Amino acid sequence: MKHLISPMDLSVEETDALLALAGKMYDHPEQYAHLCEGKKLATCFYEPSTRTRLSFEAAMLNLGGSVLGFQSADSSSAAKGESVSDTIRVISYYADICAMRHPKEGAPLVASLHSGIPVINAGDGGHNHPTQTLTDLMTMKQLKGRLNNLTIGLCGDLKFGRTVHSLIKAMSRYEGIRFILISPEELKVPAYIREEVLDAGHIPYEEVSNLENAMPELDILYMTRVQRERFFNEEDYIRLKDTFLLDKKKLANAKDDMFILHPLPRVNEISVEVDDDPRAAYFRQAGYGVYVRMALIATLLDLA
Image (cartoon, rainbow, N blue to C red):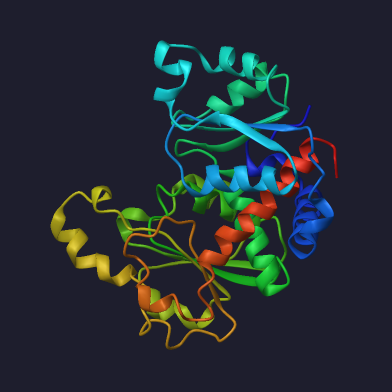
């Protein structure tokens, strides 16, 4: 049985096939409107979520299936002390596929080892968020027409951001990829990502601390939030925070066909004045996530 716990569970060929299917579903949704009739998706969310949970539910409903589940640990038997392995054993009798979000790293993997149905990791702590990575890839493919020969700027919290780590791993498998890593010293990409992924794969990258200077080179700008709580002192945060806020002024030297992505939720790292710029793609990105999850559900259920 196939599960999706990490974005690296899929080969490049499998990823490309999944994105191709998602693209067909985006272009011709009516052709897939009955694909999952009679099938049920269980959404087991042990912590709050807006986009991920609702996009999974929208995906299954778009395919003609139905949804059941819970949206917090408090509303499940986890509040009584039930283990993840026992919960998934029970849910396997109720549903055909499960999307699980959990605050503990590795919980969806544990579930997959005891499950009678495919398990999709919908985010486990700071570890993996594979469907967000697939959403990022689909967004770039739809907007740029390719996943190779791109210069990608990753900006903000590159140390703790799980979406950034997953995206670097996934994109490093494509040809002609170059990264510009834009962050304060305190929030640089972890050494293991540099050594085990970028250096080991001979992927060209640059580490810089100024967003505006890097802008003219970028095909994609992937923004993340610089969080106050990650700094050792308030003075450093105040000194650096505006450097990593995107506004119209910083976009002045950007390419006309550069696109801005963000995993959301946004706080204040992208000014609302940027929302009307045609290069702002973060809300479209959230929309593409529905079609990625449709394709993933159909693939794991062997319906596509």
